Length: 95
Image (cartoon, rainbow, N blue to C red; front, side, top):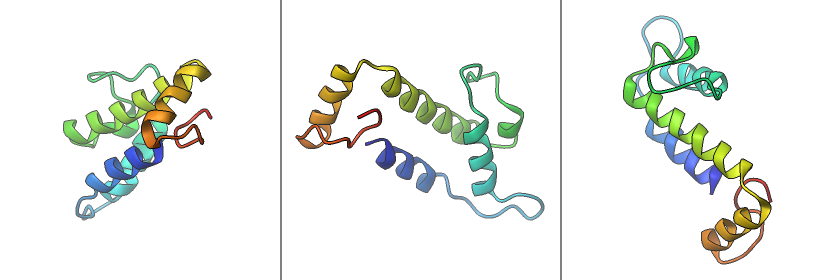
């Protein structure tokens, strides 16, 4: 599920390459690596400053979802895993 969410988010964020410097995809990858617990909607890491608010919000939400699932007790992760595809088989993180 996490991989699918990330693929949809990254795929949805692909834009035209920047004329100078890094492409949008490179900026998004750098931003994704820079997001930590300190990041908020208005407190962006430096690596995220050049992204549009929509792109940053999407990456921030993906980070929140990934880290929320990873911090859940194993039993709760298993319930989400079962809901994801009908089996407890590691289709979400933490399994």
